[in-house]
Amino acid sequence: MLQLYMINYEEALNIITTKLTVVSQIREIPLLDSVKHICAQDIYSKTSLPTHPIALKDGFGLLKNERYEVSTGDILKEGTFAVEAYEENITNPPYMYNIKSAGEDIKKDELLLSCGELITAYSITSLASQGIKNLKVFKKPKVSILSIGDNLCPVQKDIKKGEVYNSNALSLAARILEIGAKVGKVWQVKNEKTAIKEHLKELKKYSDFIITTGAMSRYDAMSQAIYDEDFKILFHKVQIAPASPTSFTIFKNTPILHLTGLPLSSLLGFELLGVPSIKIIKNESVGKTKSIYVKNKQEFTCRENCTSAIPGFFDGTSFKSAPSFGAGMLNVLAKCNGYALIKNKGTIKENELIEFFTF
Image 1 (cartoon, rainbow, N blue to C red):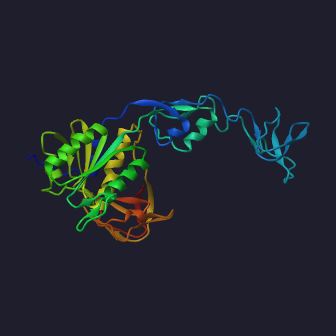
Image 2 (image 1 turned 180 degrees about the horizontal axis):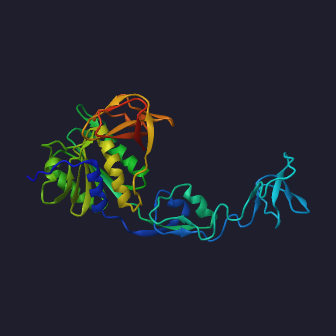
Image 3 (image 1 turned 30 degrees about the vertical axis):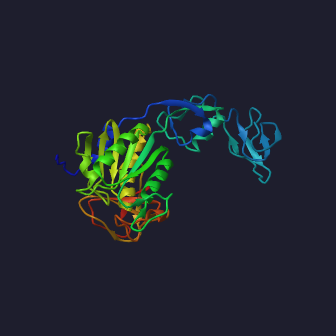
């Protein structure tokens, strides 16, 4: 069996960035339907906004030799240099006082949205102001999930003794939807190599990207199967905690992210490596993932000699880690709004600056 060395987190991200191919299909859809899609064209404004100077207050427009009544939003007469609000009594108001200049919001030919940019609810504001009804977007990629384990029970069925509900699959599916991709199929299979490969052969028909969870311990079926000739291994194991067994392969031209079955390990592994992968596949111009540096509220410890993802809550002032964050814990992330990324350091002191990523 081919043996591969464990790589660091930055190497894993670089491999994902350079080896993944994007979904390039483009379609035109109504403006409102475009939210959470990736824009497939550069969009420029057709007209300036406002088209003329307008009043920002109810009151009186002031000309050189005239004083006339105006309401908020009214187009002002040419030469108006200020608006005096009803509640004000200003002898010499400054030039353009209480006036929005022509083109102050949007200038003609201004770039409103770039190709590769994620379309949000607030992207719609400027586009709608230009009368744009339809938008060219990249087709959302389909991401399928294969959960592997002998004791898994789908939530749709009644659980039997010794089984556990397959919560990982639904958590990942919900997160996939949140980041703007589609969920293809959600299947599960026993921890047996032949059955796993047969399921993957079927799933690739419906998927641009596949995620497996479970069976990644040394002698488990998925961990063994990735060394078969059907798989091209991009990396196997990463120096990240709590998700070091995470691996990445290409299976018959379909990329697969292999996560562990332990809940927190699986979900944080997805945040670290699955989220950037899906963003690349869906043609999003990601660059460096956005983060902020914040103060740590309470001392905590993590593993040295690796990159640790520490779940916690940022309250707008400081970050506080979850009380515990073992790989097998189930409900930790429900009480968190992001994670701190700690590189090669065992103890994080109170008030120490740390890098924080929101979910």
